[in-house]
Length: 353
Image 1 (cartoon, one colour):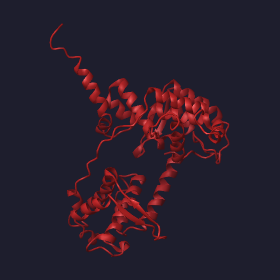
Image 2 (tube, rainbow, N blue to C red):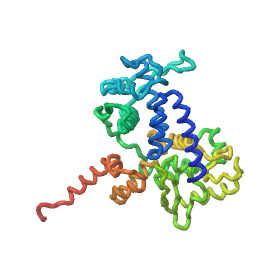
Image 3 (cartoon, rainbow, N blue to C red):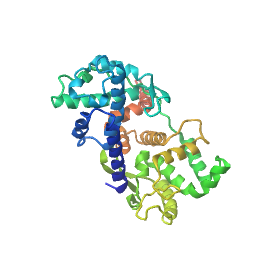
Image 4 (tube, helix red, strand yellow):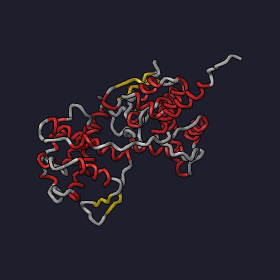
């Protein structure tokens, strides 16, 4: 594991410990128990979602309401029914959350289907663990239906928009005067980032984690660490290779905050660039060439679409994007499959001319 990924894991673990201070003491056993089968980021996500669940119980539950969350036990979990979880799912549609340190500060919050499904997954994981260990008498979460996830149309760039985006990054023509001043210093880096995202379909988190040593120009590949910790080699074409090599000349001369820092992409402070910074630079350039809301993930979708249209191989696309289940890929590219089937129908002739 690279230094960057090790540091990210440590940061997530530290955050998890902070969030656990707001959770029942018994949940520590749950997080320890799943530590061998889940990533630190997954456990952190569970912790955030369970904190919302236990706050809801404190405010709304008929038996556990008003009871100090920190002192809840696994025995108390037996008081939670499937109806309680259903009510929590409905509550997530709209609720008001106060800041603990500043009660006068309130925020109106709501969750769509994906947010609700994620929180239900955390609750299910917790109840499954304690039921398996014999700590609770039943597992009410198993009979709570998951929210139906409505498939949204994938936002992606078409061929002309891709060319316009790369031109905008290279020229800086669509930027403000202030942005153009900075652009002269970062355009090679920015072009390398956008070209790499479009040319490999990697996740933005994978992009910022790339080190110089991960590049293999002999085989036109770059090593990334995927979800779950697996290292894979992603391959790219001539355009990506050229953008990377142009930037590397500049990167190799850069002064870094830490002499041992091998990050491929650096911020203006000489540190590894952040996910947020990449998101912002993609948004900055894309806003000048299209009305579509373009993010690094949309560039990933653009790559997946192009690869599928060129190959028609859904399994290849799933592998390239790092999807564990090909059905995830098929769901996202169902519209393209439908169009391919429609075109295929015209190839069948029932009568010869």
